[in-house]
Amino acid sequence: MVENAAKVLVIEDERHTLRALSSMLTHEGLEALEASTAGEGVAMCFAERPQVVLLDLGLPDADGMDVMRQIREGSDVPIIIVSARGEEADQIQALDGGANDYVTKPFRQGELLARVRAAIRWGRPAKTDSDPFVVGELRIDPAARRVSMAGVEVDLTPTEYKLLLVMVRHAGSVVTHQQLLREVWGPAYIKEVQYLRVYMKQLRYKLEKEPAQPKYLLTAPGVGYRIRADG
Image 1: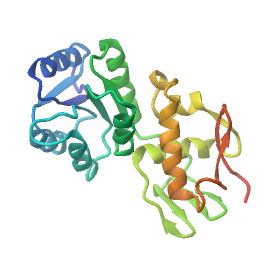
Image 2: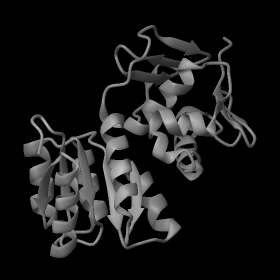
Image 3: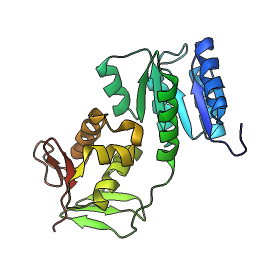
Image 4: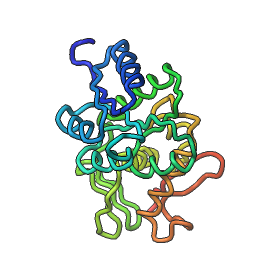
């Protein structure tokens, strides 16, 4: 392990998988933290403040979704679900619930490591202009990290906020699916268009009076999205 290595917390009850993940991360030069129960994992997350959490959904003392909710109450740490549950509904539920990524077992080691590296980059503060962006009743203030609609503050998840900021940096122009995925999640995710659909739906639900007929977050069919820039 290198000095000042990024910490990755692995919450996994299957001992063989836990050791395999820990060994993989250590070999990559990362500091692996191990937890085999939900209670231990949540406590370790807040005590050790890792840069990434790898979370199994099938834990002996609680469902992984409950663990994620507890972590999200006090932390924006990137969470990658590593689970044998491979149904699309499970993936959408996890992403909606606060996960940043979802990898199904059995996983490919190289791909999982790429996603961990991307999550570490994702977790670093984004560089943005500090001037507020205002269009219609929508106001985005990067310096204060505040988003409001008609003067009412809107609570966004870290991923929703980062996605919104990328569009603000390109206000008025279409940002392609691939560019959004690359800037928000990293190069390893440029084919994960379903991530965008999930998060754009959430953003529109929070920011648009009529999400089905958006005024601010507009779709360029088959290409990408843009945020309106005119007053």
